[in-house]
Image (cartoon, rainbow, N blue to C red; front, side):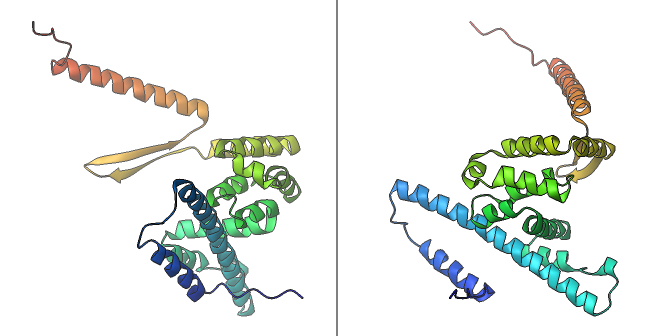
Length: 246
């Protein structure tokens, strides 16, 4: 007869954290191979911890929405405030809190193999985000198919780079629904934009989201202009090459 697992309470998590914190007070007592193994084990633990945060965030969203429904809150307003609570708990902005909640709900319900790999500590939260992002334009049926092709083999998924994950997800998506991929690219191109925000020392960050061909041309133009300005400044300052003293 299966036994129920103890609840993942804040107190239990804090106790585990204190044990690990105490272990950092002195030398590890490990040889170099043991240190590498421990670093890997901690990385897997960190991935599982982020999956646990996602699961709790999704549960919180479901619970709040159910309470709002019972109170007669209009459907468009149900769940309001969850993202801010998650953001507060994770010490991040409300915008990122909303992204965490959305990712948690999507991966858990629509990407079962990705979710299993994440819970097992085999992939990071970012890797799960990439898979969710690259399959967002697909139907649920096709999304499940890409998830199985990409994430059912956890060893293969763990060995892939982020670029390989993106390329594989896009290739699988194109094979299943090329029209959806074309529509996604057209939508992305329609969302091109340029933004500016302040930076220290009377500087600004100028950011542009552009199609590849436009971005390459823009960068090349800016780089060439920067090179010409540097050459002119060096010439004005007399910093050209000088003869070595004999």
